[in-house]
Image (cartoon, rainbow, N blue to C red; front, top):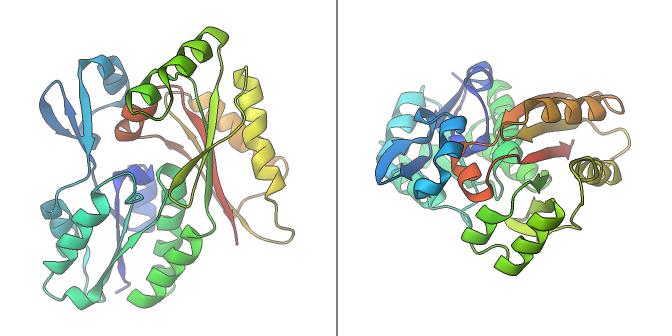
Length: 276
């Protein structure tokens, strides 16, 4: 049996994709209005409607990872991939669970250093390596290789929620809201790197595509994910714009999960990619 791949739900892989690649998903956690719930139990529309009710987020508990590892392991070991440890306690939780496994030497935990569709692309690459027959060390190496290449560029429609998280000054948010500014950032190396803001949604999309175009590697295979929070049409158009120039080896449209949207607010649009 191939090495099993486990990932947290921050990877933005829907049930269909997870099933296709044989990935076991462990849900991130939310607390809304004092009530603890799994990310997978809260539709994104409901989360957005309740953003002002007091929303807290957290990684899965060690027990959830321990159960997933036991359920996934078919005898050849498990590789667990997590959202960046800089943003969440998820990696520490998974590492604790790995130590609780019947044979901890057959479980590897990898901090992808990223999130959302970028994490999803790392997870898919690991699953493909496992399906091709790589052992635990080989699957882990492939995940680390892709994690070092993957990029994520996104635009945020509202600044209110970034202010709450301390990532944007309140004064800048007031000005940005008045002017309709879209804040853009790149998630790379487990850090958010601010980009030049845009004065329109169209301009933000062009900046995202511009960053992707400048990264092109002649002759390399493209792996890409278009991402959104309640903006499926825009994400689909973004992916079609990419396809008009390069036919990807891997491509999917993913949804920013409730845990991420709790920090960014609705209306986020982005593109994750890497060149092989």
